[in-house]
Length: 182
Length: 435
Image: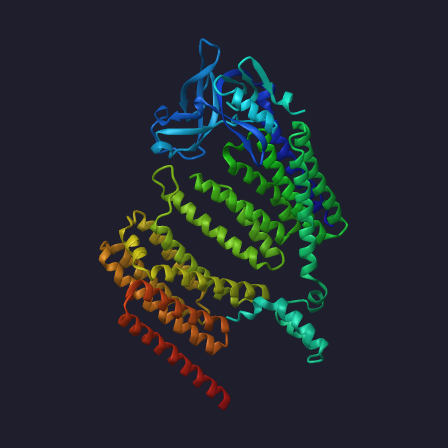
């Protein structure tokens, strides 16, 4: 067996290992180094067949108007959009503005357009990677019931705008994934 | 072009039975197999069934593990799930690298296929644990890029096929979202390297041709885009047709090579070019597609024309030394004239004339295939010719005629054609018997 092939095969395994570790690090980086913000949330749907049971969360910023974005060549599904947030008097963060370019300052979330043809392209459905909160079936349903109106999502946001869902607060109760999943 | 070479493994097995029945000697069987570049003794000893069972066995091991993880998914801590997936992937690949180094290459390649499946499952599940699914094509890209080195290092057709399937899914997902995947040629070039260096693989050849086709079409969509979106337009159809004429011409060029593999690939390419042409012509045998083509804007007709002409010239050069130069030259001339008329027409009332010409061409083509089948004793061409004529008759009866007298007249025309061909066949057979 030629030595370069042996080395190459071990490098190939290393590549797969690095891809998986890289995905993990990218996803946990906001939890380690990010800024904590709170944002209003409502549950959408409690379960997923493939992921196990989880509560699907919706936000006011899950749908934004295309008018907030610069006129250009058109928006594609999967287009990266940065949503700037401002802190309201109640301490929760709210929508401020949106842009296709990464903002230099302030708190912002990096999301992607999911369906630019929604309502003739005037409303854009957005995904930020904070839309699912895992819990066993019973707890996911119970969480959904308790979150009917006043849910608050605690997010950790990195300087690149990548956000991770840290916990969900229902009224006076704090629910974390760590508390639910042993 | 002889299509029997596509069944050469079956010929080798059949030869083994003839040897057992003392119809031919083993030496003769070896000579028959050598003609098609098949190892008589190797084919006799290997069992495809065994390979299928082993592959399925590994597949079910993978399914069992994924099911086990899924069943206990909720109970497992997040970190344990993540590191468990990484450990399964790396351990599987590591174990089978050990097998590969010991010389168990066939088993190792099955193992790498399994390891790559675990790698993909890990990407999907980690994306879901950490909510990374905002842009799904990225995950498929990383899956394909992780599989690619194994394919290249082992020169394995199966691993390359797996990688190319993933790369194609990634490409189609991206272009469907109007993004142009710049790195796709990397996968095509890698697959071509394996195809050239490795053992013969018809499936891989067809997948590479498909990949090249979609890459070329969407590259043109990128070149011709006037908005952010990648649109397929009428010009793409014209380029596709010229590409298939080129593939057909290329198959004749390949046939002249000494390599048995090149001859086999030539047969496959000729066969699929023929099938594509017939499907294309059946679609164009209706009026509506012609109306759409006439109505099209043809905004990029100049650059399209250059590409079509370039393919035509290369096709003619490829067949310059073969006996089908005349045939390809006629194809190209008819195609270019039709394209010119369609682009410059602008009157949708002319669509019916194009439709009639296409139907006549189908019937002539069908007759040509039947005659070729009889002359060269290739049953596939003969039956494709018969099916072409019958299908054309049926489509026109449903679409065009629709009344008893018209239908009867049409069937009489087709009956005359088929009976005429049958008479021709009889004459050929009589001539053969006399000689």
